[in-house]
Amino acid sequence: VFQNFPQLLFKLYSFGLFLGLIYSVPPIRTKKNPIMAGLTIACVRGFLLNFGVYYAVKDAVGASFAWSPKVSFVARFMTMFATVIAVTKDLPDIEGDKAYKIETFATRVGVKKIALGA
Image (cartoon, rainbow, N blue to C red; front, side, top):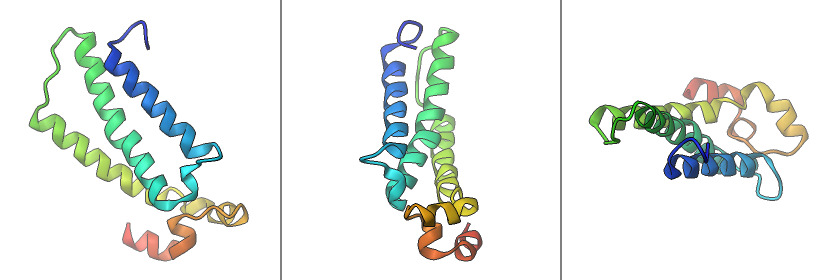
């Protein structure tokens, strides 16, 4: 990534990798906190992924980067969509999260309430 793309894209990639690491790896492990987990996932899947792909494609075809209402809408929509994913992703693994004392919205509120809210 560093050699083939602009410095901004490398920084976005590195930031996404960093967020992925702190999500899963102790001692920080944002997965243990439902709010931090949701923010981490929404940031990576919602904003960084969409902005990064858009920026990379623009660079690959030689077009200049410019924010537009369409790009802004997609980035905001996907961030909200990723937030819903972040809340519901733990529903199938509630037993494992309880066993390892990982607090999620599902372990705190219950599967039924989360599923109805989503």
